[in-house]
Length: 102
Image 1 (cartoon, rainbow, N blue to C red):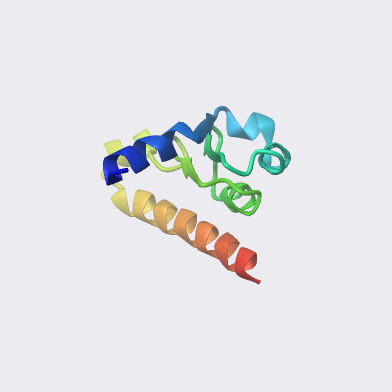
Image 2 (cartoon, rainbow, N blue to C red; image 1 turned 90 degrees about the horizontal axis):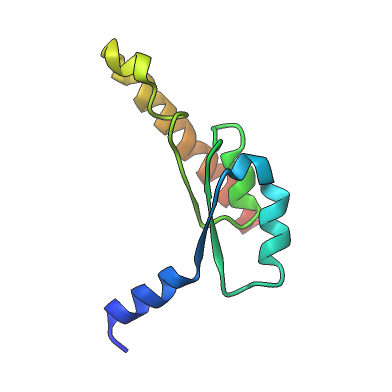
């Protein structure tokens, strides 16, 4: 099987969960327990405060919208706000991943 086929097969096993905050990270853990061949991606309501919990519960990743892209900050040219928010999200993900390695 070529690499392109491998990518397509992998994508078939990724499920977008929206809105993730309505389900919560415990849902991810519960669903993934019997479905080890699937990956969940958290979308909707993912914040700096909860992204780590989704990662620790088994989420492959997360889609970030309004938590990162603040229209007021953009209109005011406050791109440092977006940069700092992105750094906070990355730190939260990395921290959660470190917890998983222990």
